[in-house]
Image 1: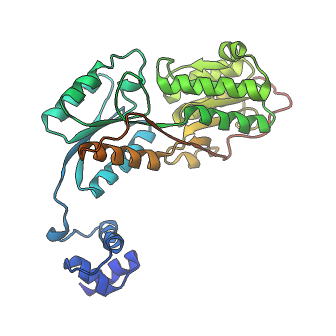
Image 2: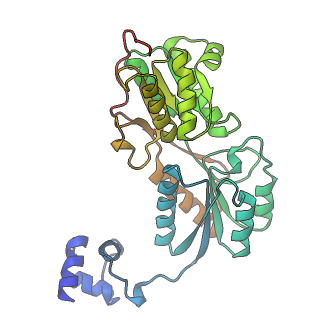
Image 3: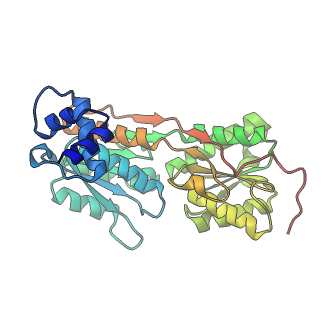
Length: 344
């Protein structure tokens, strides 16, 4: 027991006496200190005493797309931890091709009496989808928050990264390296984040390289799927149009773009520079380490939880969009534009 107290005290940065007070539920310990001790218990793998276990305030549903793209589990982890800290139990519901639809998952969660639902990159991001489903959910008095996507037809809080600003960051970086033929690889045009990235990219290319929007849209933008294979296909098309740099709408697509360059005998970044989007876990350890636009996942996840809990608590958040600024992370996949290039 003494060894355990010492371990916990060292991990939490407090005295053994303080640890003892927390474990025995004694008063006189600051809330932040108490939280540090409980976190140390969790990190070291000790079970919390029964008296310190939070009673669940209820279930909160989290509906995400497939988990193959590492940005979705990263966001789910932030949201899940934030909910747990507030005493709620997160229920992760994942859409997979051929599996349950968003509507079916919503119905399942509502049937289980969830206190609220957080949607990540759901149908609210698809401009061709029927937004009535969300109004029906509101009529059932189920609070919800929508992440990554926006629709003026839905009266709800939205949490988004600034996709337009992200493209400005990427283009500015590549232009500073001397690139003038910069391509954009992204997903289907019907999605709001895709449309916003196109707007930001076209404007940045016009402002910084004086390229006409019509030329940019016709020659330098390639739609595909948000997968490694999709990125590979889009990058192949853009390289054939003499692009020396490619901005991708996800890190997975960027890995596909690197593969496309190598298949043509080109080196990244010597011959082709590649920029990703998300800064997914482990992406700093690819070959080469990926320059990317970091999505503010911790801030977005915490804001989604805070906003939902306000809705649950009866003080609805404004029915508007909370937009978070992304950040450029420069690593090894971007370099100065080649003076010339030998084609395979």
